[in-house]
Image 1: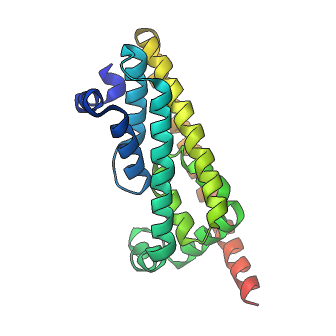
Image 2 (image 1 turned 90 degrees about the horizontal axis):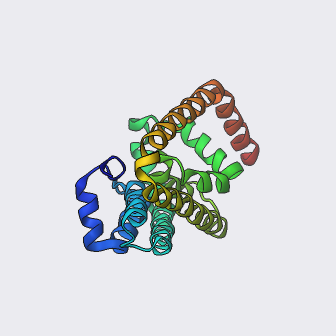
Length: 214
């Protein structure tokens, strides 16, 4: 079972704090704190399936609630204070003025989908809500896609982990390798697509900004 938990510490904490740990870990990760929220969800779900000491329904609810709350905190921080901070440190982390314009453009065009699917991508999971706030995504639209993404994410990974816990010895190895390969292929495909179309996207963003100012 340690292959899924990653660290014995998480298993020990789950036995002690249960649903509260899941809620807090996911909420803090979603708000931008570098904590293993998704790992905690999967670990709790596997633990529930293997031992039945936790109820999978409550694990999913705790994770979904944490995701929604944490993302809302990140969103409002981004909306109220994120823009000056991003302007200051953005160039240091590769987000120069053109890329910040691209982010603004992408959130205007596809903001809801970025928030929804960002929940399933490790890097975006911690920062999508913050960037949605910085780029002015409408609160109602953010809340809808954020809630939908949080619920679907918690259900998919929660049930997946629970089923893995029920039949851990049979599927843990193949399942883990399959997920690793799929994730690696997906990440490579997304990065290749982005680099191939980056300049075109940047030009579209700049044209859209110029049209708005005209």
